[in-house]
Image 1 (cartoon, rainbow, N blue to C red):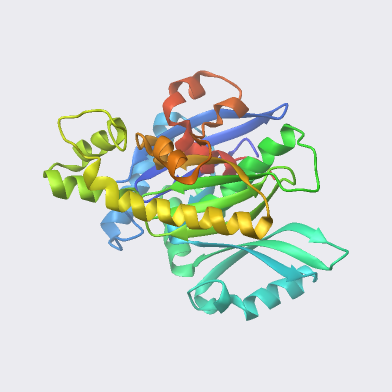
Image 2: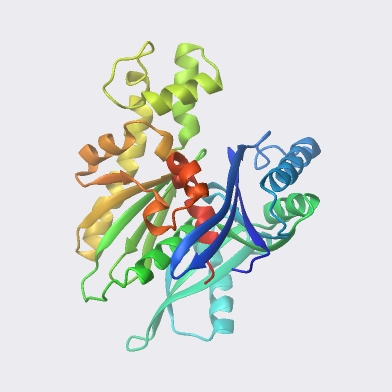
Length: 348
């Protein structure tokens, strides 16, 4: 990654800024910052929402004293579509044409209104098959986000989504751990609990490749809505209760565990179905589930999911794969929020 590039991870709830470099294989966080968005620009089309976000990004640039003006952008999984496809081995031009022709099978928006990004994952020359990562988003949304970044006096140089950036992060970690390639898969599952949705990503650690993705519309906002509506408290109080009590068994002035049960059952049911289908498809056990993103601010979610799916569940912190410095120390408790931003900052 060039020294004059930053990453802006523009989410439904937070905007995250990262400036990343690599030192002897270790990820170095030169700069990290995050702020709550004034208004969610993915659901609010007003000029006021866009202008306030651009002003916030300008202020973050000023506060962090970064001189970079090139910006790599990350958009939420909830505002994009991710598919891992198995296609016949074709030239890149033929592959793009084939996917465009069949795009309605993979994405729920008209192809002429979608921006597509393709990344070759693996090629099976013997069976003449290729695994391809497809990321798609509405062109109008891409234009809106890049326009906001430009309004903040930055130059957008790339745009990806959280899942793709997560894959870059995991691939870098696996590569630098020198994981041996073996015949059988060694599967790990990653759960990104965002504001509006949850995305699951199955990764073969031994082979160093993503295998499968799935998204569903259960996000943090559902849990927060249950707390606010049942106890008549504001957003800040609800977030505090979720972060401190959540699904734990600890006693609290407001007993929120029961009101979260329905939303949790919906979340855990989707995860359990994905785990079962993945085990059947790949004839292998999933060894671990790692939570990233806002789910790391959900007390007790890891323990409850571990009991539900019957495997170890952890809140993934990238600290173990990063060079320790003042930045990582300052954001020690929040590093899980930055994983997509960090991944997008790692040079391919």
